[in-house]
Image: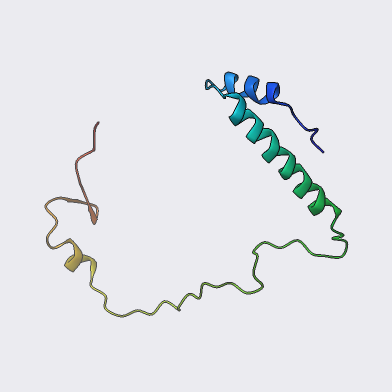
Length: 98
């Protein structure tokens, strides 16, 4: 587990990340970090033996996909009828240049 850091540690870290912390902000971060460490210790104490890892937090997926059904189709010739330029049965467009 991470040891509790002091204000100097977080001020130095902030300085390396190119911003400054005042004493009040550094103290707040130290307190929040201590709370986070306590919460992580509680999670690590939970016995998870025999529990299978989950890919999703829910047993069944919440997204239901419909089956694909062919509704209205057009031929390739009909699709290409309004193309200003085509190449081997595909739309041909000018290259996009920045």
